[in-house]
Image (cartoon, rainbow, N blue to C red; front, side, top):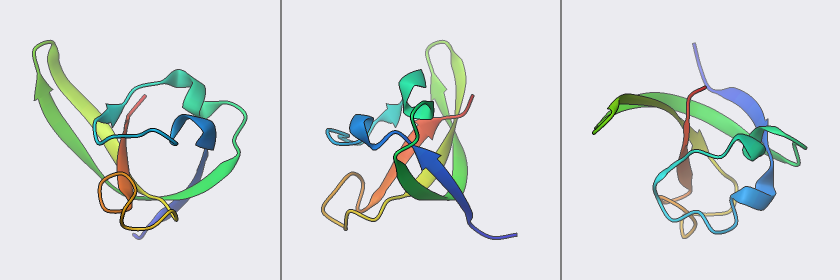
Length: 73
């Protein structure tokens, strides 16, 4: 098993600040390639929230040191 390539709508990543991204529009009009490198689970008030961890090519100063999290659908 290894990393997996994926596509997202890069328009919604521009202002990412480090939370688990939960925007269904990220899955439409795929304009940007990323790499899925892992997954996680976060406890929230409404239960467990599963998410993917993705690596972006915009450098270590973007997002969470070049990575971001998106809600698993």
